[in-house]
Image (cartoon, rainbow, N blue to C red):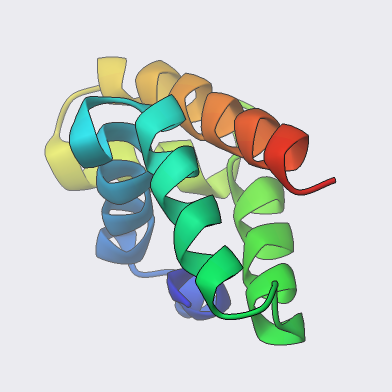
Length: 100
């Protein structure tokens, strides 16, 4: 649901998404697997979850997008801009493969 909070433009929201999707159980692929299993137990993706994922995809679309820029500001590390973009891109690609 953090994806639906991105409109607030709080750097920590983007960082939280990066931390969970990028590092849960060690990697974006593990995070995507856990996410897919969790939503699968609930009978599928609800429209609010689909909208949140759409917002996350837009926010992390490139290294210059709002999400990676916010992560870099929050951590104070410009390298996290590229890392967050790459990790969220991997998470979303893997998630799309599991839930077409």
